[in-house]
Amino acid sequence: MEKVVNEAHRSKFQTLEQFYTSEDLLVFDIETTGFTAEHTALYLIGCAYYKNRQWNICQWFNQDGRSEADILEQFLSFAMNYKYVITYNGDGFDIPYITKKAKAYGMENTLAHMESIDIYKQIRFLKDVLHMENMKQKSVERFLGIHRLDKYSGGDLIKVYQEYVKLPVKTNKQLLLQHNYEDLEGLLDCTSMLAYCKFKAGCLLVRKMSVRKNRLLFSLELEYQLPKRLTIGLNDIIITGFQKEATINAPIYTEELKFFFDNYRDYYYLPAEDMAVHKSVASYVDKNYREPAKKETCYLRKKGYFISQIDDGILSGYKRDYEDKESFIELTDSFLQDLDLLHAYARHIIRLALS
Image (cartoon, rainbow, N blue to C red; front, side, top):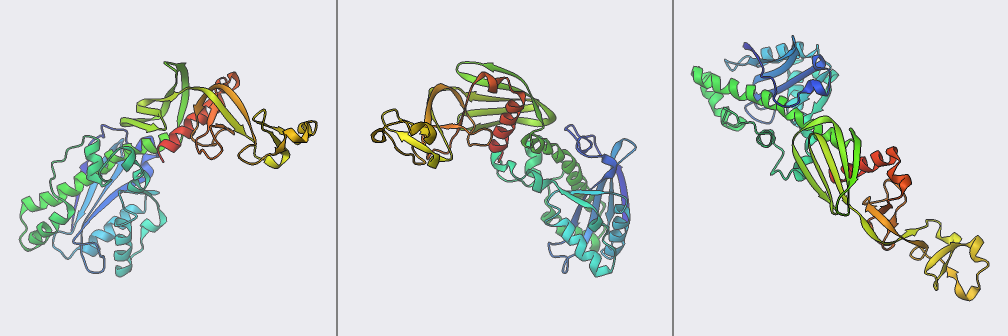
């Protein structure tokens, strides 16, 4: 068994300490000779941890093919000092693999007492939003502009490791360690993608609104820095974001829309007026000029200025017709001056766009 410790690079993107208390975090990645723990070998465990104001990388290497239990024991002992375990798709592979190996050797699985933060699971919703081919770690790294020295996949290196055990060539060992090292470095960089999750969660402030060419422009300040520019379209609403600034550019509709009442059984519809009125008022209308309202006819018409809220997520909105799913908010002074409603609208639209 060999233990290797190096200083990790300082991420050029927003790093984990922006989201969590770094001293509580253990980032880890494993290298194996296959996917099934019962029939394959664990040959390398790497982890990144924060100490003395910098990220460090530690690797345990099964250099003779017989030290699997030793590197596992050393890693699990090291891990017990941390609260969170950070992985990329670790809930799907790394953690179950370690769990099975620990059970096979009768070791306490200290990872079981830690909270798992799987970066892949948190950011995979971005695949379509960012027009990515897939959400594999290397694809995310390329999106972020990260270029590796390592050119191998984990599958490629299985044969390299097997050859190394038979004939310990230094260059092969360097390939194995380098791949795992860059996996960990890349994972640290990929955590910057969590800023998009925070954006979706509504970590923002509306700083200004303006009208430009029949469009309402929201200027937003973000709590977390987006690493790459984001542009999303949603029903003619355009959302852009980069670093700590974002905008919502929504078309203003000037037309007549309908406001539908929910309790239609309490209303009469007046065909001549093309409107619904409450029964307490309609009782004074000649029976020949009224009829029981239906869901489709229980409305008031209103001319004005509107913006789309997509659905009825913020306010009971206006629609063009009853069956329409799209809902609109009237641009009244009370709406435009209500900061809570404006923030609710911005967060609602962004959440829908990123879903």
